[in-house]
Length: 102
Image 1: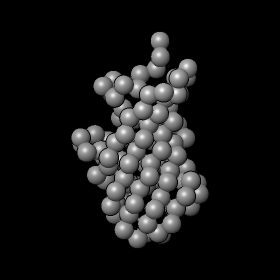
Image 2 (image 1 turned 90 degrees about the vertical axis):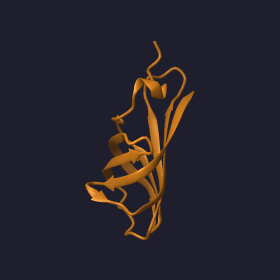
Image 3 (image 1 turned 60 degrees about the vertical axis):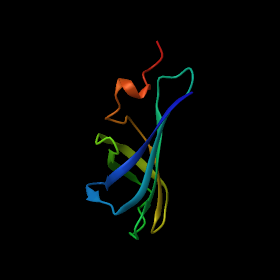
Image 4 (image 1 turned 30 degrees about the vertical axis):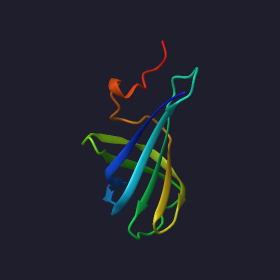
């Protein structure tokens, strides 16, 4: 299994800025597959909980890069939110080590 973790500096959910306190994005490729799994765990200042539906996430990592993809809400309350990716994650580079196995 390969994985990479990003600490986020900003987050937009479906085009709306989120008052982020802490955001961690984890991307995983399991052995024997070319598919990626990714999940965002975010702590925010109080906001309305997100509906359990797909949202476009736009995330800026500490290195300044934009990561972008569709995700569904696993859990959301006023401050803690978990999103699971439901498709590709744009913004990864070869240096992240998440290339598909040959």
